[in-house]
Image (tube, rainbow, N blue to C red; front, side, top):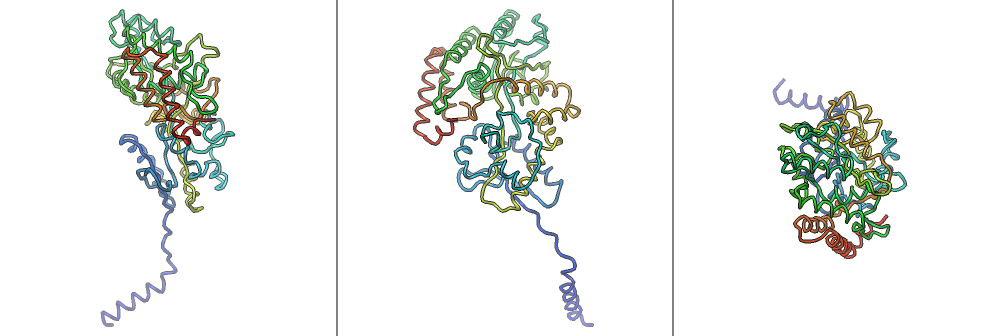
Amino acid sequence: MKKNALAGWIAAFLFSVAPIFPAASAPTEIAFSHQLAEADAERLAALVERFNRQQTDVRVKLARAGVHGKPAVLSLSTPDTIANFLLRKTAFKPVHQLLRETGASVPLAGLSADLLASGGRNRLMALPVAFATPVLYYNKRIFRLAGLDPDRPPRTWREMADTAGRLITKGSHCPYASSWPVWVHIDNVSAVSGVSVADRKGRLEFNGLMQVKHIAMLASWHKSGYFHTFGRANEADAEFFRGNCVMLTSSSRAHSHLRDAPGVELGVAALPYHDDARGAPGHTLADGASIWIGSGYKAADYRAAARFVRFVLAPETQAEIARVGGFLPLTDAIRQSLRARLAQDEEYALDVAYASLQGKGATHPLRVSTLEPVRMIADEELEQVWAGKKPAKAALDVAVKRGNAVLSAKPALKKVVSF
């Protein structure tokens, strides 16, 4: 048989038998958009890659989020972007609806009411995946050297003052520092003290007697050297890590980094409370990242999204999120299942943070710290207090006035604050 004829015969044969060996169907590919910084983006990429390796019929592809346009099938909100998502609720399919339509069964019993706030009536609008709450870190080694009991950290702000004074007399140049000042000292101190940062009509009110008293106390501590500030974000974490500060209030997720600090014997305790605040201590607030589901996609895309949701909530994934990122498991049942997978110090830190969320108190779906223009105003006014240029009441009055002016100029944003 001639060469050309042979080639033609082979081609004809392959064509004739092709239906017997059908090509594998392409996986359903869905996009997952985010706006994370490099380090957190790498952690998210590793998580997504692990999901992609576990099966072949769904593939999640990471993408940088755009400012406008149709949301991706999966989108990640963070505390500083949550307001933008809430302003566009109609662009997203509620997670409780996704789960109902796809028949997905996920372990959400016992989810904190604080995390259910965005959906109303105990229904999830978005799926919280990585959250944290503020705690108090302290260096047990320095406590011991100062004659303080390393197993008895201060529980109240009054005890914090006594401890800071003792550390000063023993030569400490930075007894106490705080990261995320607006989140810790306005949002969470207010919550623990049982007072709100906004009324039900969306008007800010974080200039009440308790808030003024707390900021005035910190101002006096700043002047006396008890309290130090280093920036608006987590700059104080680095000072504690280097051993320059003895006590620190920061995110519970910082534990995954601070536990490796050389020369620091890490202690973790609940955020202090004012013992003269009526009903204190209340609970701290849960903040972190959530997955939102874009609307207007095909049924196959939503089945793929539900598959990823189940993966995120699996005990193995939750353990990885807790171990690598320092985040808290979503429910008590998941937390209990992780105990054998975590080191003792990891388990203790998570227990302290988780217990802080369980107290009584009202919950608001937004914080001052999540409203970027308002947070910037609050930071500016707090810095005036730390610098001794304004008393606490005047600064908080101005912050509330300026913040309400911003909300009035942006009716949609004010509507988000209302509840």
